[in-house]
Length: 242
Image (cartoon, rainbow, N blue to C red; front, side, top):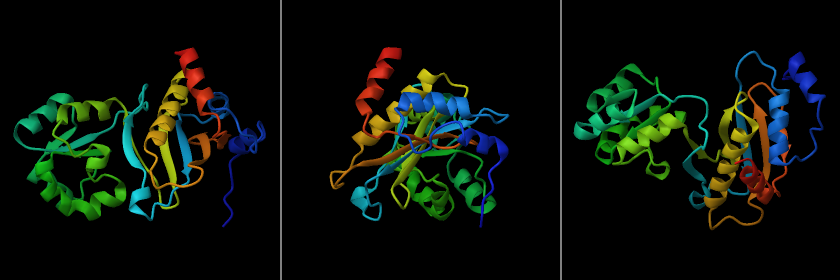
């Protein structure tokens, strides 16, 4: 099936060399210039990693707090009881519950939230929701910090713009790094933080070139290719604008 692109997208493609590899700072400026939709588009960083996610020891997964957030306030659900539930409410969680929340999701299909956090003692019940939460990336997981006893801090971080990342079945990672309305410095700092985090999370078993390709794009705009061999330049420019 042939996918037809709109006139705005086609015009944007003509304004730059799609085969060129840009420094991340230059790609940020270009993505902002090319965005022309009538809403504040999300800017996303897509990174292809040299890993094989079919092997558990090469799965790259985690979370990080972006310096300038994502521009979106996440709806946070917390599975907790007692003092932990009170802490979640005080920290700004949108939905808090224990057995009642588990039943609401299982029986009513309630999924009106972006992030799910749980205390360890709740995971026996929450585990039964795997078929509903898992495919949507909503299952609490200790590897990304969403199964925790530190409910207050975790809720506040996700409300402030903490994001999760994980490789898909072919080794790609997609992470939102802000909105087109962000300044170039803010987008650059967020994107650089993502790249630093991915380097930190590199599996010991990964062989060969780890970062294969990087693309930056807005929701409705074309992808701009980023040179994966310029990580030091990114850090220097963030420091210079900092």
